[in-house]
Length: 130
Image (cartoon, rainbow, N blue to C red):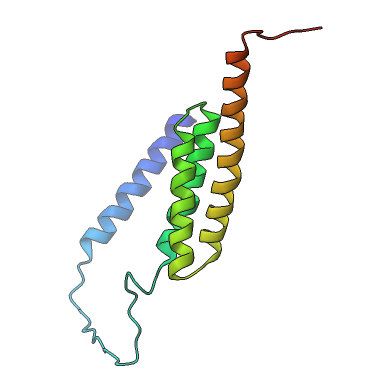
């Protein structure tokens, strides 16, 4: 049964490809491009959502680095804060705000966790279970 189904699918696929190849298109259409003076073309300076996208992407990479237990997460959070601040300077949008807030929040959490780990390790007592 399976062999017949596969043979049917191969036959249908081949038939469709042959049908498209056997009927060439001889008629072409001419398209006309109209340029309007009122049309706004997006430029790098007017579409500053790139800073918000970079900010949220850096924050997401920082969270991924925390999940993977990598100390480079602090760098990603600093990048998220920086890109978010640049996004505020040009034109604040939701992505820049979210990326900035996530960057600051997770940077503080990660920095506090690292400080506590270093204090705990430098104490020398180790883990005490009562």
